Length: 154
Ligand code: DQA
Image (tube, rainbow, N blue to C red; front, side, top):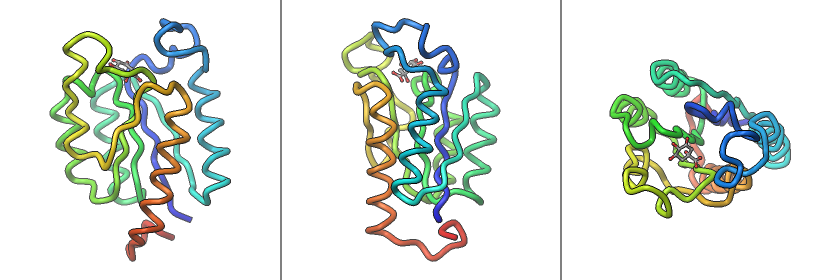
């Protein structure tokens, strides 16, 4: 069963109470549970993590290089600032899907720039927690269409 890392950046641990008019009322734990449920349905082994630290996010992306067939990432504010995240993502050869709960393009101008988008197969934003399910469905389809022969599949 392919492993998919679902990585989440800073402040997403506050979901549920953090600006719910922008990010919705789902907690990160509820989103994680939804991802695991979707993973079961699609035959994907989900590793779901959140960190407030840029370095830890980079370390987990590097870990994905050996362990994951695909990456779903909501790098949160690091999306707009982190060349380190971009460089780590460049080293990952599987499909990457970028997710945001809100639609950054409807918000402040600085959120329109993403260091993740240049290496992402696609971006899902503006659909709240549902975006994670849509991202996993996209990943499952990409992996079906582009089967890989590496150990990541097993
Ligand atoms: C976010 C959007 C980012 O601009 C913001 O910094 C976040 C969350 C989202 O999921 O909508 O922390 O990635």
